[in-house]
Length: 380
Image (cartoon, rainbow, N blue to C red; front, side, top):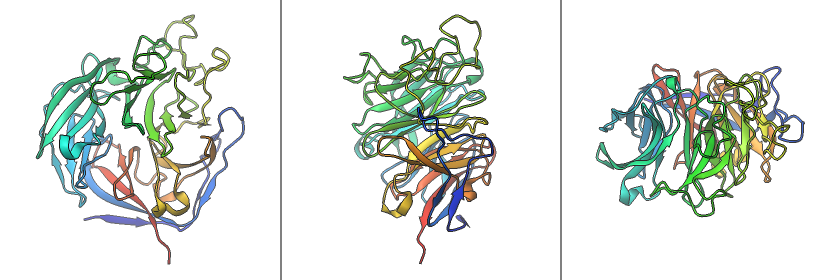
């Protein structure tokens, strides 16, 4: 059974007291926004454990990776079953485990999807073929050697397809000080690779797989209809960031202070413009406190009314959904938080727009986690 939760027709909220909504490079604040119309939250499925992502099949079913190392197959009516798949090499520890999942655009004929997960020695991408309710590995690995850390800290690994069908992979720095600025490492980066081969795409700025670098822990990648790519990234004690990707851009995270300090110095700025004057500033920063923002997806389609084109970003620590009104140039104009997704369902992780135009979210509370469906309610 689906459960519906209605809420007020006017969506209006400000960020938590003391939290900044800073437009990158401007030093200004993004005001709270009022979103006319109503929204509806629906519990589609429950009984999951840290569902990390949602991938939609052509028939409307969902593939849902769960961090402990299981893939659920969920029908539109919320029936949950397990995909038979050999996931014995998934190392589920701390923040790491089975993470992002991307369904291939040609799934109707290829039946393929790609997952990203921690093993004991690395983070890797594997491509699978689904037959009935069983999945077998057909490209193992598609890409290996992404760094991992004991305890799985800063494993990153959010995947999305760009407008040309290339695979974007946001990675984490594994809490190692030099990784983000080291272009010989795949950690602390956004990669752009061929979905079939895992190799770098022609036109990548450094002639390899790296598209951008200097990131801390990329948790969300969202591609707007015009091709502009936005990422959501965890900050340390301050400054979660929403970034717009520029090919070859350095996003300014360097807890090694240029190799001059030992350990992992998290007192450095998320975007260190003093050390890296050409670093790309964030288009939004949380300030203090952080929300532990996670996945990101655009609301696209006339069914969203005035919310059409809004960037939806989930938050783990903040246990909320943030709705960013973004400009054509990629700046953040305003931020709103729907009351019915502000602490009401616990930690929110995954965000993906479905073929029906609704936004699907996953909770990440560890027990009886849910898939939520968010739609705009037409007022008469």
